Image 1 (cartoon, rainbow, N blue to C red):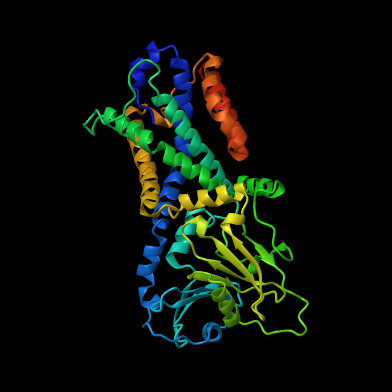
Image 2: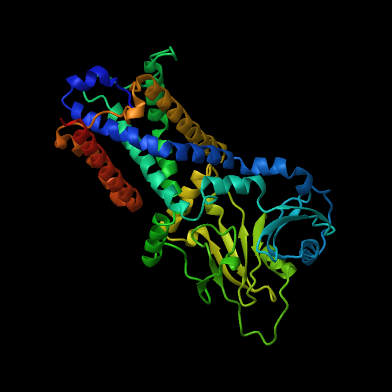
Length: 454
């Protein structure tokens, strides 16, 4: 987000060497991660409107005629399983009488489908691929369509996004020369100053949002997110202790849905002191949830392991409304009633950050601020490309990309290390990628120096 013209200021200011060192790494960071950030910004911006997009995509399946009476929820399960040949894994219990129940069905081949059932007469309205278009958007956003290893790439990209913001602030900062750009001064899009000012102004006003999105996106990462949650758990800052029994890690197919990141994968085993086995029924679990005044809509997860309690998790926007019931399916006994207020401070921060990241926590203003950050990433990328194009070197084929030359004085590199080293320590995968980038930079410069020697 550089806001000063380096052509003249850099040579006159005492920090010109440091400025060019930071600018060089700002250039390379953008070159490496902006394609990923643009994809994440596009898919993330779409995901902010998941409810609206789902409503349009499934309007003909999710809308039913409102009637005062509903049939047994066990018939919903029977209807979905009879047609699909699979087993119901979870059920979204609707809040309104004109909404269909949504059942996720796991097929024998391991794939999933979403079945829409009329709750009034158990009529199967239709079956769609699991998650539909928004599931694809979600998988693109996390890069898991490429492979599970791509989750590590997401963490690296998020860390470099923070470095981009930090180096951009360094470059924008006036440092006694001239006031940093706060409005568009140049008006001719054919000239580089226009794109420089657009880049600077966009970064100035959206940099904090972009950095926030990067930091709060870290919980999804395979390394940093796991390490954070492990620390929270070990220091008693995470999930609460259950009133009876103990939480256990579920098998992959039995992990409850809709319970949030703090309780992700956590199940409770049922009461084995019953005098006789009691059939597990969806209707008894819904009755138990309603008797405990669990607000609809909520999602009931049905494990394949008969010794595991079913979960009923409220679908929420604000994290303060989080509530999860662990219910014995045969008797309707509630084994645990978990709410947000019971979480430790680390888990609360974790969940709050995710809710704000997804634009849910503070209503429409939260959503549009996050959308603004997504749009800003595209503006920064486009303006950066135009800036580079207008100052590109004439001989790109010879490996000259147009990056600022590395300062000759090694002391000026301290400015870069002062910015990126703390971030590299805080986010180890980003730090590792930084080491690789430094080694590559040194190698390339030495090879160029050797090629020009007589």
